[in-house]
Image (tube, rainbow, N blue to C red; front, top):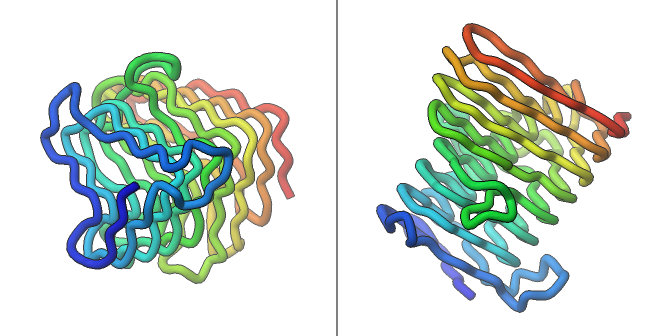
Length: 239
């Protein structure tokens, strides 16, 4: 396990190479019990990832950091499982969020560099709960599976719960299944927003099941400029 309180960051991975990265498993069990450690009260991102690969984080608490809970760029493979991520960020100008990654790439989920967030609780972070933004490259199969994602609308300048955004020539696929997305409309906006406003490339958004409660919009998809969009929304419950 890894635990840090205070300082600039709790974990920093910077220029670790294609085979670098980090695996934290905690006790390996079926609970979100924080056995992988707690990262809290840092002045920057709780976990900072830059030019790294094959990062797997499980059963950790990432709370009350002044930057993103997990933030960074140019990450090839990021799997977040049974994490508790809450109360992070204090600046909307920086889009500070629970999870905020740009230029995320990865293989198919069964491959060597999977990407996704599984069975995690992400709540009451400053602007967004999860934001993935790419301008180039291919994000093959980003999974959101059986998570509890929520905002009570009081934690900062609240936007969408989940942003999945393509710019430039990025090609990205979101596969979201199950879980709950609970907002506090009108203080919060959309449950899941998928958009491509780049010059080329495609965003594909598949949303299956899941419960969307008290959002202005449950699932929103959009496209502009030269980007392309494919989407399928099926079996969701919205109230």
